Image (cartoon, rainbow, N blue to C red):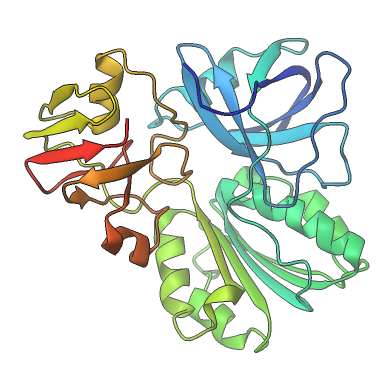
Length: 323
């Protein structure tokens, strides 16, 4: 499967480390001795796994730590196979392919103050950002929610970062303690007027964050989802027309557009299959998409000029795509 990107990187797995119950980190280095491409805080790579699985994982180490890529994976019993494979199969010394680093959740390095809200494995891109802010000597606050202390990754690292160059502050909240709950509205309300705010975690946390930030300047509000807030469009009952080849494909109930294309051996770029990474963005020539992603903004969705084929469908009987 071609992703339409530059040739993938060859990585060698140098270390696997248990970070918390159900969470492991994976350190990759260059397999051919060449320098790894640089990355910025908040970036991710797409790992190519067996059975044509491609999964996006945030880089958690500092951008200045340029000789390696470190990701963390939480085992998800309800997932689509990627996390289960990562927790069961890789061994130190294995080689995997990966995309060049990309960044849809960039850090505003110029901000004098940054406030972060993380839930569970959502700490990974934020940890890279905190490393970068420490290097810059910028002030930051982190509010980190986990199920329990045993399931909260990188807690010792974060505690050690408190009071450093950036005078960082860390607050932990654990779901197994009734006395502690993360009050997102209060965190946003109490943030300094010029602060940049970031959130990465479960959909309900992101939804509460977006609602709480409604009155703040849009350029100071940043978030990243691991899954779309809406269920994928699998109702089917419409036809997709591929403009370049003229091929017409019926999308059956239970299938997405991406499923239909792959079932017909049509090679298209995709990665997350959840409508959050933007890899499968496709231009719409005619028809009305049924948008289910969390990648396109409201104006882009209203224009109907593009669709995320991994999760979105069609409101019209025919959808013509630039494929």
